[in-house]
Length: 133
Image (cartoon, rainbow, N blue to C red; front, top):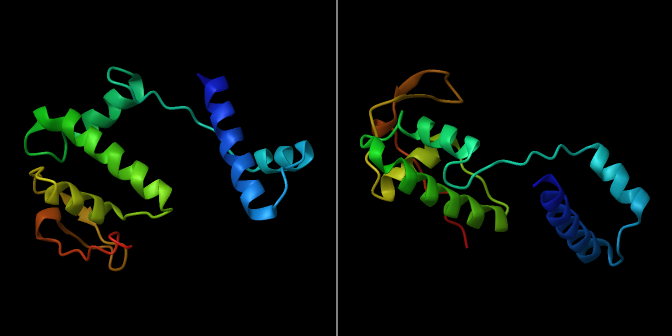
């Protein structure tokens, strides 16, 4: 699994390097880049360890814990599309996105980054800044 991940990341890095620099990266340049990277392979297929852990975490925020697999799949699709556009969401925006996708959430406490105070996630107001052309 690690060798497959390494092949994928090498292909992506080489392609992006060539797009930006106009030439393929030299081995020494890739080695220098890899010294700054940490590659972590996650088992996210149904039944694999990290997916089970993520779905277990989802049961803590979903009103219907049985929808954990559906929520995980929706989040994975959203994350893939955001990665392509090099965008991100805050935790509060992810919770709002889940709610907007029809996943009812428990009244959980989320910490705000500015004041440090927390409030129920359902009551929080979010701007959909992640919807950009």
